[in-house]
Image (cartoon, rainbow, N blue to C red; front, side, top):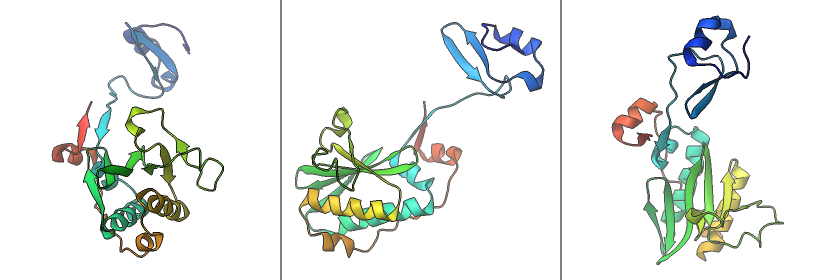
Length: 194
């Protein structure tokens, strides 16, 4: 078996059987890729998913979390939602107080709060102030459980200056979608191939 050697694509396939095409580094020009168990004609594609596409392909629990967050914002007078391609912004007047987005398959909320104040607290928010995208909302919270959802509602109430009871009593928005494949999402324009 050839491992870690520089070989051309034709030479690698000609010298190895189907079982041996594992962990071979194939180099062609400036591009190199580690192939592990894929046939020669396999191709890898990258996609740009919109917020709605991620929500459509999310689990029912994540869709429920998103519904609770969006319903809480819609129930508050003075807060409004602005839908971007990759995230949903929450504004109070002209000030952005939060944004909801996906990082991979995880629903996240970024708040206009100082992350250093919440560093040693139960919230375990991440400081993402170094990214230009999060300049207005530097505290990121990953919402992976009902407890983290309650934390997100509490932090949203603090960032927006609204009573927390109002957010907790709000009915959830309908964010349940039927699962669609990537091909169907590309047809609808919700996913762009890169």
